Image (tube, rainbow, N blue to C red):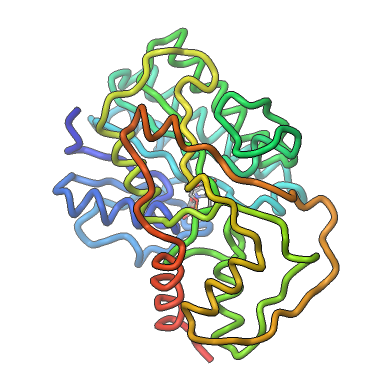
Length: 319
Ligand SMILES: NC(=O)c1ccc[n+]([C@@H]2O[C@H](COP(=O)([O-])OP(=O)(O)OC[C@H]3O[C@@H](n4cnc5c(N)ncnc54)[C@H](O)[C@@H]3O)[C@@H](O)[C@H]2O)c1
């Protein structure tokens, strides 16, 4: 598949901006849509075409229909799980209706364009089946955010099955790396970096044994490139076109704090605070399907990824 004309929605955000950099380095013509509700304009490189559109707009739909894109990597979203709880309408509007606007534009105006949706492996499965979560596990989202992402995955399966669209979903685990936001699903890495840089101990809620699957942003970018340019499954069943993108490794908060302190060259005692009700205890994903069907696997160790992340926060830290 040709990767020369690419649209990245959310391309001024954390993950999207790294993906734009990567496609530009591959020589692709890259267009970005981002309403800058959470993104930063200066993250979009000068060589990319930028439109400050909302993905729910007619402008965005027209661009998708008329842009002649080979692939759309759709990352634009309200990505704050807590915010989805306090304002589920905004979450559903951006995450469901925004995605639907793009999918309908593909169906009606550009049906050969491939669309890769950014879903979540951290918020769709819930706490019922023992991890590592496989794609076919029962879904029990614990937040409006998880419900919205899963809803779009049903639309993806529907558009594939009924309309023959070339679509897939990547379910990211907890993504960390340079430019990350403290409100994202791996926000703890950003928060710990900022605390260490201010001379404060990592603050851990509960006993710190709760686990997550931390995947480096560069590896998530590579998964998008593979999905946008490689061969995808043809089935139109829910889960068939969905891929967990993580590491398959469970890391506890205490282990994360220790690994980050080692990257930072600090040895502060952890600070413990009461555990937060409703927090999922164990979350990590099986990545066998992406390994086999996308020929993708993560390349960055947690130690290396945390070192690069800490270095970036140190360079951007204002006292
Ligand atoms: N960071 C993680 O750990 C993680 C985990 C799982 C899934 N994801 C998903 O990956 C994608 C990227 O997440 P991120 O962490 O880079 O978040 P981010 O907030 O940095 O990026 C999302 C971008 O979308 C833009 N946006 C939001 N609503 C928009 C709208 N209506 N129209 C146009 N642009 C809009 C924002 O301005 C932002 O730049 C999201 O879909 C998120 O749900 C992230």
